[in-house]
Image 1 (cartoon, rainbow, N blue to C red):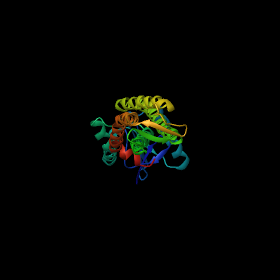
Image 2 (image 1 turned 180 degrees about the vertical axis):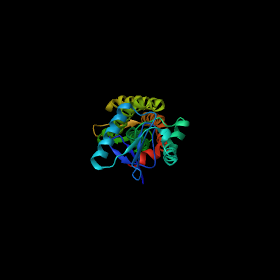
Image 3 (image 1 turned 45 degrees about the vertical axis):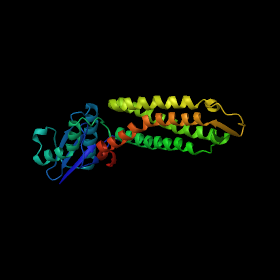
Length: 263
């Protein structure tokens, strides 16, 4: 009976029969013939390999009294195992050939996917939120908004923007680590625009010149000024949102098998 295990990012051996990455180390355990075939990916680090093998041998000595024959020379692997390796590497090879597979760890794949997915949602939410301001009470010359709602509007917008700023700051670090140059550029764009939005709305009550008749409770904002505010922010949000959503869809298509398989 042949059992297949890979050494995962939590530094433990787990059973896996579907996917191999180029930085993995994999053990094919032939219990019937008491043989262990150890395959190592071309991108595996030596320290990781030594640690994986030491843990494997320790587990075998503690849980089995068999005299295992360890085979690391891939030229001596039987065709059954060679074919299995080829099948498990198929997706990784295909994506590498297309230049798509940049990420080397399950953790960075999943964190990146979570960040861009959440950011897509937040940016789309921001677009609808800002666009909804067009429907505030108004007359021919001004929009009418209570002071409470005015500051609440800016508070909500600020919180959403800060959230995406933090998320893409984390994403920028991951993109540098994984050398994902497109995501580095996208992260810098998003961070720059978000900082610009935060600086802009930090003016608070000084964002607009309120019309005569405004009170401490009710603000009358010139219609042209308020529409300019909405259009300006929608343009900034669209510049961010379109590539973020595109990247989310593209990333999920490329790495879907790595995102959703269990550790």
